[in-house]
Each structure stands twice: as structure tokens, then as C-alpha cells.
Length: 403
Ligand SMILES: [Zn+2]
Image (cartoon, rainbow, N blue to C red; front, side, top):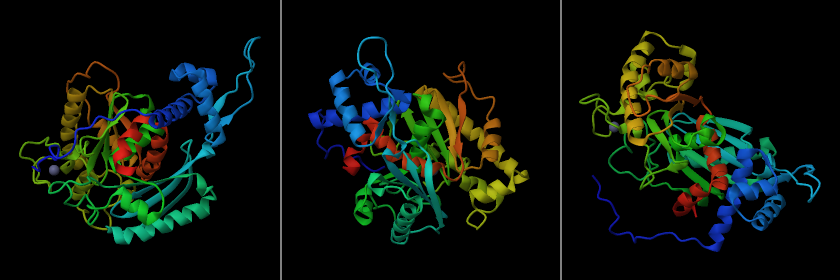
């Protein structure tokens, strides 16, 4: 175990200042409009508990910046001025999301409403930072050209790749991480690319995408289990993203769920991702490390006898993990998503029932199907920037890293 550095770090408590309060309030207004679709200033004052004057100032600023649009005045009773409905301007800002994994770089440009405005991809082979950076730069230029979007409104780039970051000796080894990226941080990428960069793990980004644009927008407490090359989790607790002390929360793939089970590259045995991951599936199918080890091949191949064996081997450990997460966190749901093609994901979900008893036993749908497919992560990567623009809490979280 690495010793923690808490003794060396000063213990600080963040205060609030006017500058911070202003940016917090701006985000609160934007997020409230986004969640409700269309609101008047009076609605906004009521829903955000801000004074009408503050709402009015922020609305003017956001209209001026093109983030909000003013609609036709609504007649409101006999007295008072007509109320003007405010909506989010989809073209108010854009974000680029990229997913870099062992085989592919997927890049897309998203507008504020979550619509994909341009998409590109390029094959890669376990690229080092020196190999990947020119390609990232090139795809950024091509997205700009092909989308025709006003790049002056670009919030930045969300880049997602297999984590974890800054952990020595444990999971930064093995087939599910990329070589040479251990020391790379967002600040270095910003300098190299000349635009704001948020660097995040695939599971966290996918969870944010699901929270922002997907089926989890109504869930306050959920764990998003992301089946990729490995297995990771994004944790939303009490409506907030939980990332842990060193931003490595959600390493669910290395929860030991099978005593004396299959050996894992992390040094332990019986880790969840040795059973539930694309890598585990590729191994069962005998295609690990080869050219067929891709989600596209899985989708085309369908579920054969070897696939059934993998489903059988994966279901037990996954049920155990769900029980642990539910019992520990009292979440509304576990959302299952990732790069596993939909037909495989549905088969795996069907195989989970009946779920073990837990504090969640008596309530609704405990395991829900999240978005699946090739673009889930790149979408989440772009959503990071949008989320950062809207969610007061994520901004605070990122202060140390990006600003
Ligand atoms: Zn492990």
C-alpha cells in the first residue's frame, strides 16, 4: 500500500467569495433552464431561490453570451409585464469529446442540447502520448472543418481513456490500460493542444453523459457500471458525482468478488473485471489480443456456445457486486452500460435475475440498462465540458485539476 500524503498537505476548507458565488449562480440558472426546458425569470427566481434582481442580471448576461434564447412574450394575467420564456440555445456552445482506447480514437462535436453535430474516427494501436497527440490535433481540425461550427464557442475537449490515473503498482499495469500515459495530465494536454481539456476515466464520463442526456437524469443515487476493456464505475451519490480522495473512486473492476478466483494483473485474485469485461469475454471466446477482439466483432458474431459460457461465468460475480453496491450505498439503481454490444448487454442483464436480497429488494427496477455502443464514451467525454458549464459541484471538483 502506498502511504497517503495527507500529512504533507495543508488542511484547507474552501470559502465562498463573490467571484465564486457569481459563477455558482450562473451555473444554477443554466442548469435550471436546461432541466425544465423553458422558464421565465419569475420561474427561475422561484426555483433557484435567487433574488429577482440577481436572476435578471444573470439572464441578461447569458442572453448576451448566446447561451440562452428569449421566446415570444407570454401574456400573464392583467397586471404586470409580459413574461418572456427563456430556453437553452443549442448553438450557445459546443464541446468535443474523444475516446481513446486500444484500437480506436472516436471524436465527436456536441452542441448544448446534446446533439452530435459531427463525428470522426481513426484506428490506433495502443498509442503512446507521442503517437496520439498529433492524431488528436488532426481530428480536432477536421471536426472544425466538417462541422462548420463556430469554434469560438468551443468549451474545450473532453478526453477519455482507460484509467486509473496516478496510481502506482496496482491497476496501471495489464491489458486494460494504455502504456506511457501515467504522467500525462490535463494541464500538459492543454498546453500541447491549445484549448481547455478535461481528462476523465471512461466510466465517469459515461456516467456523466447518462446523467446529463440519458436515462439517469432522474436518478439521484446510482452507480453506473461501465463494461469496457475492463470494468469501472461512476458514482452519483445524493445527486453529486463522487470521485474519491485521489479521483480514483469507482475502480469496481478490482473489487474481489470470487475468493481465490482468477488471478488479476493487479496482484489480487477474483477481481470483478476478470469475469465482467470485454477482456474476459475475449478470453472466453479465444480472441484476446487478436484482431477480432473488438466490440464490432462481438456485435457481428452474436452469442454462441462460448458466449453462453462467458455469460454464465459473469453473472454470478456481477450479482455479488450489485449486492455489495446496493448494501453499501443504498442507491436507487445500478445502471449497466458501456461498449458491450446491446444484444450481449441484454443477455447479461437477463442472466442476473433473481438478484440477491439487499436493502433495495422491495423497490423498483434495481438494474437498469444504460446506453450502449461505440459512441457512449465519446459522448460522455463531450458531456464533461457541458456538465462543467452547468453543474456547480463538478466545477468545484475540477478546480484543483484544470484551473
Ligand atoms: Zn484486480
